[in-house]
Length: 71
Image (cartoon, rainbow, N blue to C red; front, top):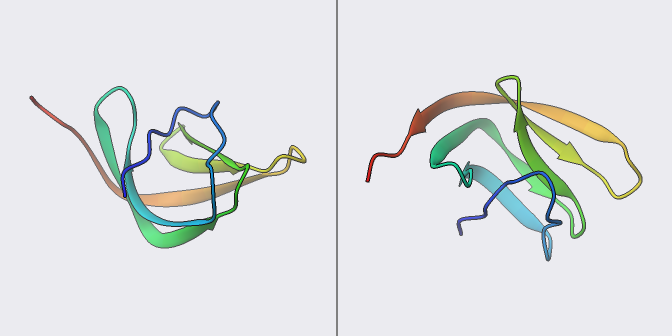
């Protein structure tokens, strides 16, 4: 499943994310898959994936690889 990780829109349900594509056309592969709960927001900040919980808590996850998608 591809999600658009814009850091604003909460994910609709529990997801296991190993890779995703940012709206800007940047593809990201994570070091390890991450469970993201319903309501969490996912963003890409300073070379890491950041998951923000509805409570405001934030967790950062390292990225294995990232690349621009040329169309």
